[in-house]
Amino acid sequence: QRSIKALPGNDKCCECEERNPTWCSLSFGVLFCLECAGKHRGLGTHISFVRSLDMDTFTPAQIQMLQVGGNAQCNEYLVGETVRAKYDSAVAQIYKQWLQAKAKGDTKAIKEYESTLKQQRDQKESLGHAAPMNRMDFT
Image 1: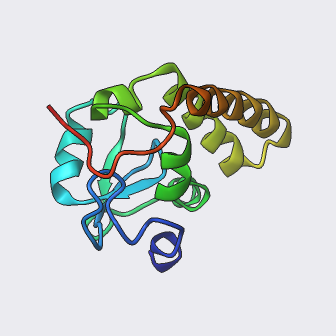
Image 2: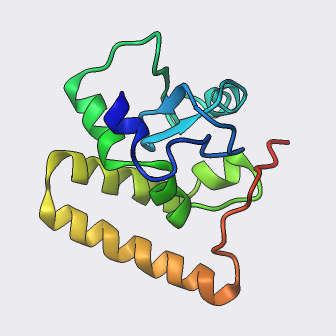
């Protein structure tokens, strides 16, 4: 758990920046607070699979997903006006596939997904939409 919390941005909730998050999305490799965990659970497990860092046990594959993820990395690629817009999108699906490839060490897939993600991020930056919001609007 310490190595996961030591990743850039993981000292705060990925969504609202509350300190010391205790919940995670195995799908996106991010950490968040209890309130934001409820919002992620509302997306459904097919989008964001939520677990408690303190109460649940993790398989080695799940731990690897958290270790290759991280809040800062996720927020670099995914933005949205709402939690659903941020995580239920084509870019979010590519991001999840990229994390899975990283966790498995599939270098060919990593390069393919990374290229697509960077193109998406560059397009958003050119439109002025790449800067993550400080607090997500969950309505």
